[in-house]
Image 1: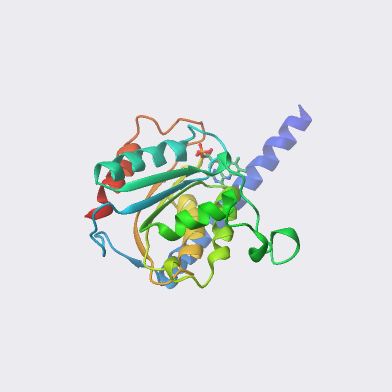
Image 2: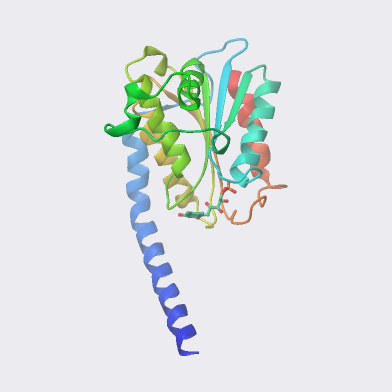
Length: 229
Ligand SMILES: Cc1cc2nc3c(=O)[nH]c(=O)nc-3n(C[C@H](O)[C@H](O)[C@H](O)COP(=O)(O)O)c2cc1C
């Protein structure tokens, strides 16, 4: 009993710290988004037939919340005439790039899963990044994908892409999801002339599949439909 009370007090203490931290940092989050320098546009700067769309889904669980949302985005983007490729990162052998050791950018073969994924990224006009929120950020696989694009650093095809973001988190907090979006933005702001087109922040989604039947599914579908609007 004593241990249970101790555990509950610790949990309460930690959760109050987190809430305080979250509200204090929300202002910083807003200003981070503002200084990222990524332009937002509700309409496409590049109307084009057969737009090439890459959807990167990084949840470890197929049929997880972000993966279901990514599928809805795919459905919309195909209806809008896009040539859509979806990569479920857990299905491929993704190298973790390093500046030392075996996975230095120049040592990663272009004929590997990582090399092919980076080529798909370079070829895309539109990129949809879907990651669960893990500790207020994108998850490990999404970060591995982001870092893998360093293989192509300096390639002019890195520029002029349109970006969509999808995340799901367990907390009932828009700020938590926004933190994850800032993880995406940290990457996107390093690309030449990117445009942010929209996002889905599915909150209160702890259970796999919890997103089914929610409005978030339609939001993701509508974003997909918007690739040429
Ligand atoms: C390692 C880990 C860290 C997580 N961190 C957070 C977090 O910081 N905030 C939150 O609200 N949910 C957090 N979650 C819960 C997930 O974001 C949530 O379950 C989400 O729906 C998972 O998406 P998926 O179904 O696409 O995998 C975390 C889950 C794991 C496994």
